[in-house]
Image (cartoon, rainbow, N blue to C red):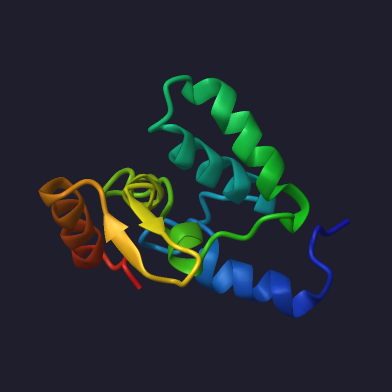
Length: 123
């Protein structure tokens, strides 16, 4: 039985988000493999990655949480850690109730964001 509610959803996952080798051979055999890949990549920046991987997997499971498309497509691929870097970098920003923000990390945050934009994860 498919985890997808509609055939088109599974087709989109296969075309855009499923991890495949350059020749088109799938690395993610199931959507669960994709969730595990994303969870593992996000957890790598945590102090206890093994524990966080399971927490992140459970959040992703059954489509309870859907990361942005570029995170879903890029997590766990080379260059390593871009998805996790996005969340780590965003954590350096504080958003006020009025929607304005300021950076606490100074030059380090700017450098992180430049790296993210260079790899297509900044939009």
